[in-house]
Length: 113
Length: 116
Image (cartoon, rainbow over all chains, first blue to last red):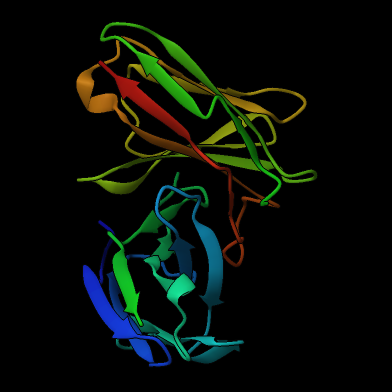
């Protein structure tokens, strides 16, 4: 089957840097995605890594190591508005898998002043 | 605003009833996905449609069904509702939905279903 593990909670202060780790198990790999979800809101796409290495998008960066089945999301210069849940996700695999996403259980980030 | 619309925003109903949730994908997107989010199960994939045809099934109960119409909007039908079906139901769309790199999925605002 497919599974993703990520910490359930992370806390940090404004201006700090936080790293959210994700390890995954999947039989077919098409890249690792990250989504952000504010309380009660819709998940929104943050980043995607198909190949090893770092992808940077403003204050957010995402890293992937395919050999280690591991990735992380790095959030810099934290702001209060970054308080949200963050999900890593992989594409479903299998003969009739389509292109749906399998999500980790999410990491709740709390940023305090 | 993702461009994906869902109606209704909230739905309160009783056990045993049937409801229909509606989703309109972003303009030009061919794939529609339905996800269920509950506190204990997280975001669970239910079903995907691509250009009108069922593409993949996830953890969808037999009491649930969906379809995608020629104008690409989709409906999720939930019947014989149970208390445990109370959850947020999200629709997402993506441009493609076939093989290749992972498409970005754009999520609608969700429908909050409460079964009493």
